[in-house]
Length: 480
Ligand SMILES: [Zn+2]
Image 1 (cartoon, rainbow, N blue to C red):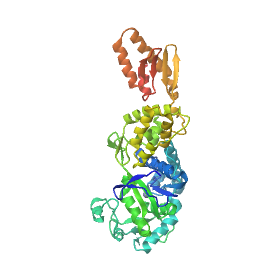
Image 2 (spheres, rainbow, N blue to C red; image 1 turned 120 degrees about the horizontal axis):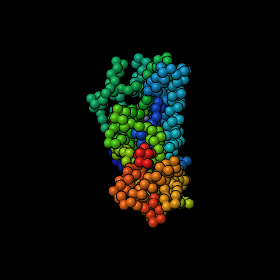
Image 3 (spheres, rainbow, N blue to C red; image 1 turned 180 degrees about the vertical axis):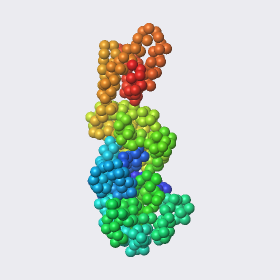
Image 4 (cartoon, rainbow, N blue to C red; image 1 turned 90 degrees about the vertical axis):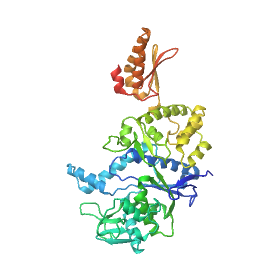
């Protein structure tokens, strides 16, 4: 059996995965809070750990892997989004608007992550469906002396759990010194965090021993992983930004309720994503959602391919240039692979991914397969990496060839409408060459390339090819 090695954030070491139960390998990924579209940074863990899910399914069998990714559908940000709609004049109660907002966002999330080729997890629990389990867990923490109720809140007592901070390697005193902690009169220690808080009558709330209220965010993941995976499971994953405090708090809650268990054996964290060398932010104008990119015509497979180009443990930089280069490369691979009648998965591909999800190394292997024209292997690799479905060439990677007497144009089917414009440019280029206006011809050739059109001469035709670059309709229009 393939040996899978993963870097465990808990021990900072690459460890051989030894599942608690090889007949049911279990992993949990913290999912989104459903109040808005997923941005590109949110997509990175989904794609990275989708590769891990695929690897586990390959090694242990699809029916022997359980993957849970939650939806946080109770949160102040969701309430605020619904309230803003109500204030803008939307009809319906606040409760109905909240429900509408979460339903809509979950629909968007599915559509966007499907477009990135991410398999749906085995379970996608919604926090609001596990309130009973959360209340029971909080009661257990109070009974064991790890939590206390005060002024309608229930707080976790961090000083009662000596290992608090072990995952991120901080002591409670360091945390107090370095963190923005919410000081509240009902807290025994500034680092104590909320397990339950009161809800006003107009906000979502549930009856509990501490009055009508709603759960804190951290207890949601502890309760849902416990309900669906048990008190001990194999892998817990998420972005590095969640390591503290969210994952520390999950560990504290789960370990204190089940001191006999070990919660997650392996912790995995992906590093952050930047855009054009800078942290993504609305004020810098480099903030965009997955849907923004899809709508701009960047195929989901290309987004996935770029995300997998950097090892998950390293910060990555999304650039438009990288996306364009990767699109051209992936298109070549897909077109070659679509000629294969069958697919084959090679041992070196699996071994490379099993080595701590070395997706960048996997790309090298795929490129070798492409160069060597090992088409069945190429197709198998692309399918395994989630970049191709059943050998089918996606429309964006397809091309058509139109011949007009001595001219030929190669382009993607979706660019058919630009054929007259491209033909005009090609004719003009030929004319310059016939008249020996070589400087003008070269200038036009360079400008056409800027617009995504490569001009060349073959023994039979003058050719324009738009399939190796990203076509820029505005620049094309300006040239014609
Ligand atoms: Zn979580």
